[in-house]
Amino acid sequence: MASKLPLSLPAARAVAKLGRDVALARRRRRLTQASLAERAGIARKTLTRLESGDAGVSLENLARVLFVLGAIAPLEQLLDTPADHAGLIMMNEQLPERVRARKTPRAL
Image (tube, rainbow, N blue to C red; front, side, top):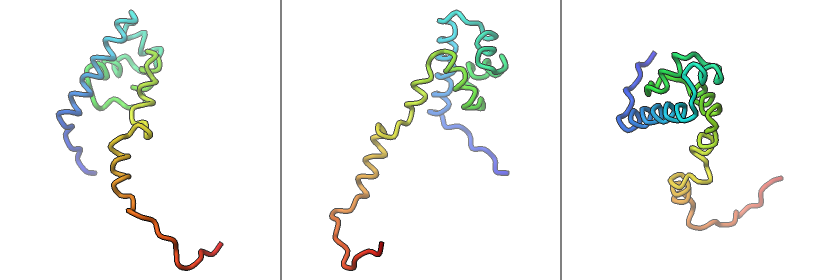
């Protein structure tokens, strides 16, 4: 089994911020960790790890917590393909300059 590469600094910062934001959203809703964990169907320890920025917490557990917090929509839109400007630019750069008709008709 290959060893894991360390998480890049920008990714680690983003995960840590996400954890802090989850904790803040929970506190703003006046929910205890135990209450949010129970509603999300996860262990309180898992929620604690998520809030502390542990990148090993599964995406499924994050989605469960976001759903309970009423914040699942941003996750659904995270890499929305019609809004993927970088991807669209890369695809457009690979388009042919012109399209020519085939010399022989295609078989149906």
